[in-house]
Image (cartoon, rainbow, N blue to C red; front, side, top):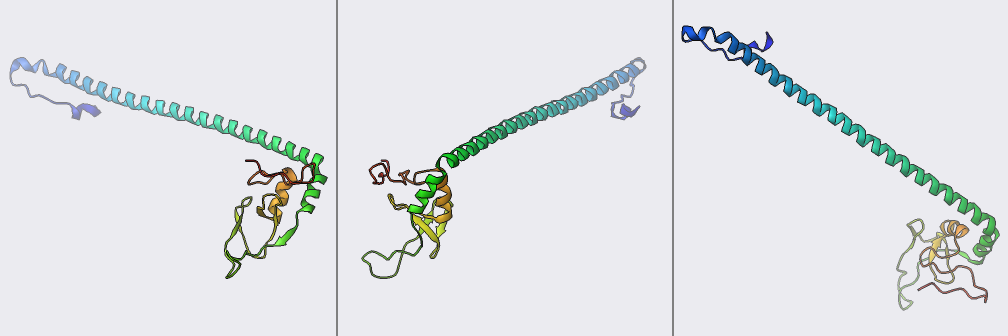
Length: 182
C-alpha cells in the first residue's frame, strides 16, 4: 500500500503484543488515510469556493460595466439631441454672435507702465492649450476672456455664455451686454 511507509511500525516486545500489532497498524493506516482525505477535501472546498467567489465578482463587474455603458450611451444620446435642437433653433443666431466678435492674431501685451518687453501668457480654457504669439483668437466683449477661434466658435454654437464666467455673449434687449453673474 502507498501510505504504508508513513505508518509507525512497532516491534512487538512480548508475545502478548504480537496479536495486537496488526490491528494497530491497520488503525494507524486508516487514520493517515482519513487525514489525507480530509486535507484534500478541504483544499477542494477552498478551490470551489474561490471559483464561485471569482465568478460572482466577475458577474458583478460585468453588470456594473453594462450599467455604466448604458448610462454613457443615454447621456450621449441626450447630448446629441440637445446639440441638434440648439443647431435647429439657434444656428443663425450663433452665426450672428460669431460674426460680431472679431478675430485677431494674438500678441503679448506690454508690461505694466507700457515700457519694456511684452510679458504674460494666455491659456485657452476650452482646449487647455497655451495661446501662442500669432494664433488667431477671439476676445469676448463683456468679460474680455480670450480663446482660440476654433475652440470658442465650437462652444458658441451650443452655448450663449462665456465658458469661464458664464457672462452672456450676446447683448440684451437694450443693446448692452450683460455683466457676468456674481
